Image (cartoon, rainbow, N blue to C red; front, side, top):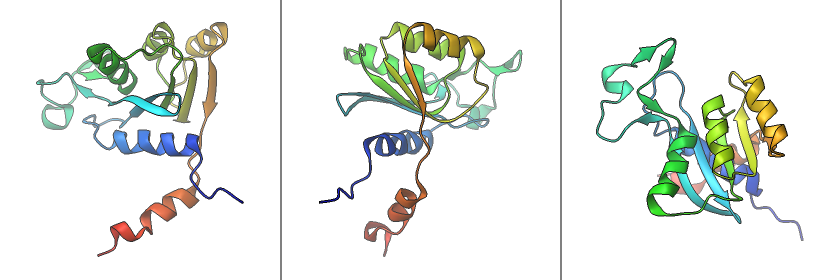
Length: 159
Protein backbone atom coordinates (compact mmCIF):
# COMPACT_ATOMS: atom_id res chain seq x y z
CA UNK A 1 0.00 0.00 0.00
CA UNK A 2 1.39 3.38 -1.03
CA UNK A 3 1.99 5.94 1.73
CA UNK A 4 0.36 9.19 0.59
CA UNK A 5 1.58 11.25 3.52
CA UNK A 6 4.00 14.12 3.06
CA UNK A 7 7.63 12.91 3.33
CA UNK A 8 9.46 13.93 6.51
CA UNK A 9 11.92 16.29 4.84
CA UNK A 10 9.07 18.12 3.07
CA UNK A 11 7.03 18.26 6.28
CA UNK A 12 9.84 19.76 8.36
CA UNK A 13 10.87 22.20 5.63
CA UNK A 14 7.30 23.45 5.40
CA UNK A 15 7.38 23.95 9.18
CA UNK A 16 10.49 26.10 8.73
CA UNK A 17 8.76 28.08 5.98
CA UNK A 18 5.75 28.60 8.24
CA UNK A 19 8.01 29.86 11.03
CA UNK A 20 9.70 32.26 8.62
CA UNK A 21 6.35 34.02 8.32
CA UNK A 22 6.86 35.29 11.91
CA UNK A 23 10.13 37.00 10.95
CA UNK A 24 10.43 40.69 11.74
CA UNK A 25 13.28 41.26 9.27
CA UNK A 26 12.46 43.44 6.27
CA UNK A 27 15.32 42.08 4.16
CA UNK A 28 14.92 38.29 4.39
CA UNK A 29 12.43 36.16 6.33
CA UNK A 30 14.13 32.99 7.62
CA UNK A 31 12.76 30.09 9.67
CA UNK A 32 14.58 27.15 11.27
CA UNK A 33 13.42 23.95 12.95
CA UNK A 34 15.65 21.70 15.06
CA UNK A 35 14.64 18.06 14.82
CA UNK A 36 15.81 14.95 16.66
CA UNK A 37 14.33 11.50 16.06
CA UNK A 38 11.66 13.02 13.79
CA UNK A 39 10.46 15.28 16.59
CA UNK A 40 10.68 19.07 16.58
CA UNK A 41 12.74 20.16 19.59
CA UNK A 42 12.85 23.89 18.83
CA UNK A 43 12.10 26.49 16.23
CA UNK A 44 13.19 30.01 15.49
CA UNK A 45 12.88 32.87 13.08
CA UNK A 46 15.04 35.91 12.52
CA UNK A 47 14.19 39.00 14.52
CA UNK A 48 15.27 41.36 17.27
CA UNK A 49 16.03 40.42 20.87
CA UNK A 50 12.79 40.08 22.86
CA UNK A 51 11.73 43.52 24.02
CA UNK A 52 13.83 45.43 21.47
CA UNK A 53 12.34 47.35 18.55
CA UNK A 54 11.77 45.09 15.56
CA UNK A 55 13.14 46.02 12.14
CA UNK A 56 9.55 46.14 10.87
CA UNK A 57 8.86 48.91 13.39
CA UNK A 58 12.15 50.83 13.56
CA UNK A 59 14.02 49.81 10.44
CA UNK A 60 17.16 47.76 10.23
CA UNK A 61 20.15 48.80 12.34
CA UNK A 62 22.80 48.48 9.65
CA UNK A 63 26.54 48.23 10.32
CA UNK A 64 28.91 47.36 7.45
CA UNK A 65 26.05 46.05 5.33
CA UNK A 66 24.54 43.81 8.05
CA UNK A 67 21.60 44.35 10.36
CA UNK A 68 23.05 43.96 13.85
CA UNK A 69 19.61 44.07 15.49
CA UNK A 70 18.63 40.67 14.12
CA UNK A 71 19.25 37.29 15.71
CA UNK A 72 19.24 34.64 12.98
CA UNK A 73 16.63 31.89 12.93
CA UNK A 74 19.14 29.08 13.54
CA UNK A 75 20.55 30.89 16.57
CA UNK A 76 17.08 31.52 17.98
CA UNK A 77 16.32 27.80 17.72
CA UNK A 78 19.61 26.79 19.38
CA UNK A 79 19.15 29.43 22.10
CA UNK A 80 15.63 28.16 22.76
CA UNK A 81 17.14 24.73 23.46
CA UNK A 82 19.73 26.30 25.77
CA UNK A 83 17.05 28.26 27.62
CA UNK A 84 14.91 25.21 28.28
CA UNK A 85 17.67 22.61 28.72
CA UNK A 86 17.04 20.62 25.54
CA UNK A 87 20.05 18.74 24.14
CA UNK A 88 20.99 19.54 20.54
CA UNK A 89 23.69 16.88 20.09
CA UNK A 90 22.86 14.74 17.05
CA UNK A 91 19.92 16.88 15.94
CA UNK A 92 19.19 18.08 12.41
CA UNK A 93 18.20 21.56 11.29
CA UNK A 94 15.72 22.51 8.58
CA UNK A 95 16.30 26.11 7.58
CA UNK A 96 14.80 28.17 4.77
CA UNK A 97 18.18 29.62 3.74
CA UNK A 98 21.72 28.27 3.70
CA UNK A 99 23.28 29.15 7.09
CA UNK A 100 25.67 32.09 7.29
CA UNK A 101 29.19 31.51 8.61
CA UNK A 102 28.35 32.52 12.19
CA UNK A 103 25.29 30.24 12.29
CA UNK A 104 27.34 27.44 10.71
CA UNK A 105 29.88 27.66 13.52
CA UNK A 106 27.14 27.75 16.15
CA UNK A 107 25.31 24.78 14.64
CA UNK A 108 28.54 22.77 14.56
CA UNK A 109 29.32 23.63 18.19
CA UNK A 110 25.78 22.62 19.15
CA UNK A 111 26.36 19.15 17.67
CA UNK A 112 23.98 19.43 14.71
CA UNK A 113 24.67 16.51 12.38
CA UNK A 114 22.65 17.36 9.27
CA UNK A 115 21.63 20.59 7.57
CA UNK A 116 18.60 20.76 5.30
CA UNK A 117 18.06 24.07 3.53
CA UNK A 118 15.58 25.38 0.99
CA UNK A 119 17.35 28.28 -0.74
CA UNK A 120 20.95 29.19 -1.41
CA UNK A 121 21.81 32.52 0.18
CA UNK A 122 25.34 33.88 -0.04
CA UNK A 123 26.73 30.40 0.70
CA UNK A 124 30.03 31.10 2.42
CA UNK A 125 32.88 28.91 1.06
CA UNK A 126 34.36 28.55 4.56
CA UNK A 127 30.99 27.40 5.93
CA UNK A 128 30.87 24.74 3.22
CA UNK A 129 34.44 23.75 4.11
CA UNK A 130 33.58 23.51 7.83
CA UNK A 131 30.59 21.25 7.13
CA UNK A 132 32.84 18.94 5.10
CA UNK A 133 35.60 18.98 7.72
CA UNK A 134 33.12 18.04 10.48
CA UNK A 135 31.37 15.43 8.26
CA UNK A 136 28.05 17.23 8.57
CA UNK A 137 25.69 16.34 5.75
CA UNK A 138 24.18 19.28 3.88
CA UNK A 139 21.19 18.76 1.62
CA UNK A 140 19.00 21.15 -0.31
CA UNK A 141 15.29 20.33 -0.01
CA UNK A 142 12.89 21.73 -2.57
CA UNK A 143 9.28 21.81 -1.43
CA UNK A 144 7.17 19.86 -3.91
CA UNK A 145 4.30 22.07 -5.16
CA UNK A 146 1.90 19.15 -4.77
CA UNK A 147 2.07 19.60 -0.98
CA UNK A 148 1.52 23.34 -1.23
CA UNK A 149 -1.47 22.73 -3.52
CA UNK A 150 -2.93 20.16 -1.14
CA UNK A 151 -2.52 22.62 1.73
CA UNK A 152 -4.22 25.47 -0.11
CA UNK A 153 -7.01 23.22 -1.33
CA UNK A 154 -7.56 21.61 2.08
CA UNK A 155 -11.13 21.72 3.40
CA UNK A 156 -9.91 23.34 6.61
CA UNK A 157 -9.37 26.62 4.71
CA UNK A 158 -12.77 26.63 3.00
CA UNK A 159 -15.63 28.62 4.50
